[in-house]
Length: 396
Image (cartoon, rainbow, N blue to C red):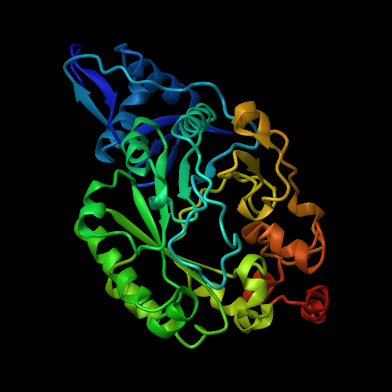
């Protein structure tokens, strides 16, 4: 325990978050630790440069935080900028920030389609990040297009660590050389890898498989955490076991598997469409998901929104044609306008609804309606009802 002249300080990788509950957030490892009001107030005072006295009941808590490398002792006060203003309810925890719609590939399944060479200005990006931090945000998903093609990407990159949020770069990997990997200041890079060589290149183009694997190697050599995102499509269904072995051989700890929505270029490539009864079971291949649960009964996406390159704010990137406002109005104002559903209102009796939250709300609406469950998630759990695929096929 500290002497009277020692101060408690949060480690650089941690911040306090006032969400629906009070937390200490380990940004580097993406871990939330729930705090009592007393523990939160104690740590908040230390961030203000105070040296509050320890109660006997605090000592076990302090020792736990020391063991987890969440706090440290200092001989001098260590003031930290902490946004103590409570989050809205529900909290905005994950922000998809599409900084550009430029891309170096023309993937056959891309829901965005051809971009308009739109880029968010650095000033607008800073405003969004300030708002997100003030709203107690956790994870920033830096997206595009290909975000590395933003004309001012490296200026943006240098500022990311100024905010108490976890930054995750979503990239196809083609532009990630050894030098690029070393310069990145993000906490994580999520690489798109859509199968083995044949499956991946069938939608992303020749030589992309080799370059994507090289990007993973470059990032790991630079000690940047790598996760992988894979889309299920008609030409990679026989490759999932091989792909799983490949990712495990590279010690990838998080693998996100999903199904693309029939939008953008995918509308023109029906050979890539996979129906729920076929695609659903492949969703179970993913592992290591890092999303935080809040215990809310809201449907999928209850803690997520997106900012687009045209400055619009919407429920997520798929809802780009249904914006709720503009960046200049403030992220909090736009967030409060987003329509949300409750799992109790879904036409679903599946016992897993509290886990899947009804699945992708955009995809579910395309198949049945606002209050229907996502049939791909139903199929993954063995609860797909007959006739749902036929109904969607007619809708196409």
